[in-house]
Length: 279
Image 1 (cartoon, helix red, strand yellow):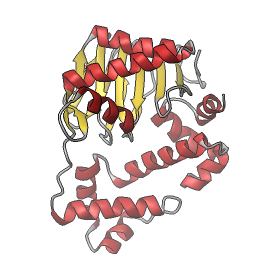
Image 2 (cartoon, rainbow, N blue to C red):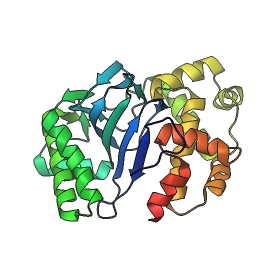
Image 3 (tube, rainbow, N blue to C red):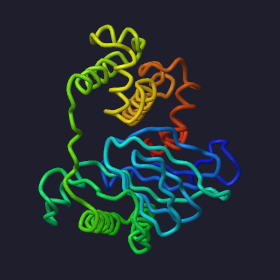
């Protein structure tokens, strides 16, 4: 099962969607040499480590997750991931859309407001097993079980480890400049300005803009732009766009350029990702 993609010996991954669970991305993988650069997700991450050790670099520091651990990451939180042991790590991940989390939170009456996880990792072997069971049910084509188990997992995590999603503090002109810079990079993704040009357009200095952007989004503008390009490329591939066309549309120089960054951030190559969508 899965896609080696020519990566290190013993590595495999499957990143896919089950049509009966719309909006949910599923990733099961074993990585040894693969490292995820700093990136963020539109939705929530709920991951069960099933073997080895995963090291996750988060704003509050590095977390080491071993078997039986559940990793919980809120939307738009910048993070990295890599092996924390020679044998790498294996895990089953649920990339949940915000709508599912909000819906389940309303049903179980968690704190008011948009729910967010209040911890980065918990030791929860039972919860970790339940996450892997969602994967097994989806892989077996058992829609009733997969949906039931998924909602049970989300409810378990929200009821034990959630509070209102903290609003990002907007502190003065710097934060406003960072948000305007992000919007401009979104608009001009295929031909972005330099940091100096961006700062001049916003009436600030390059260093001040860099500092404000890092504080607001957890990464510098060029790192954020690469992540944003990959996210947009994913949406294009989801819609059936060929990888070569998607690469140029989002501003990568060619398909190999897309392949490299896409594989690093998503965990599988664009071709394998698109084949799972087409199937």
